Amino acid sequence: MKKVLFASLALLLLCVLTGWNLLGKNGKPANANTFKPAKLTANEEAILHASTDNSFLYQYRVDPHKYKSVRIWLEEYKYGKLVNGDLFELEGEAGKKGTIMFTASLVSENSKRYKIIEGIYTGKGNTTFSTFKTFPQAGDKDINAFSLSGVDSAESASGKKILGAIGFSKDDSAPAPPLHDFEDLKKHKKEIQSYATLLVVRCEFKNNKRSA
Image 1: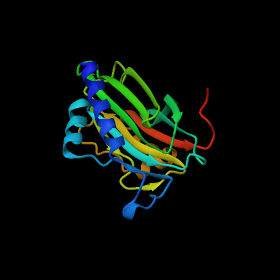
Image 2: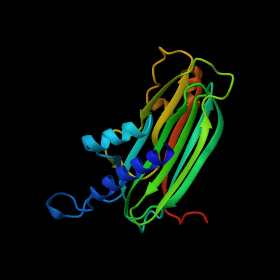
Image 3: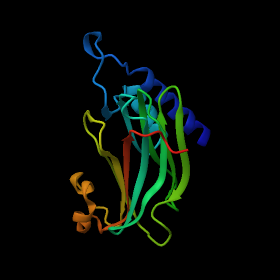
Image 4: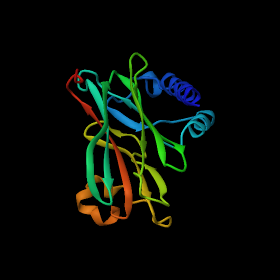
């Protein structure tokens, strides 16, 4: 099963990378330093949904002289309290263009165990990380999950980005918090206190070379 998952995601990323040209309309160079949700075909969407339960997939194009690396990490909150600000941190070379991926796939319904995969794919060099983690931790029962994407359209690559969020609540009628709540969670503690676990997936393009 794990080999099938990796193979499916690898095929999807190859399609996405080869399908995004550095040239814009009329054959002119496209705008650099752009970050946007990956545009998938119907077949690519089918591969993604068959491979994982929750996913965030983005494409970017940057000036390699301005941005040398890209960093992905998670912030983990339990009932509104930040318990880990740098969970599963991953950093890789940015290159000129690439794809950033985060997936969380349920492995065991009874234990709420998830397979986490993070990836930075440039076509020339790829940086990946995978692990297993239980969300929420043992003791939290009857938990319902939600996920939402953090970027809806193309925007500047500068600054810290919210790739998306995954939350687990005991109230199955609790709506997903609006995106603006994630921009400053200290001001929106009340809105997220009902979530046994809330994961906010972030990324940032950096102008220094990645850490050794």
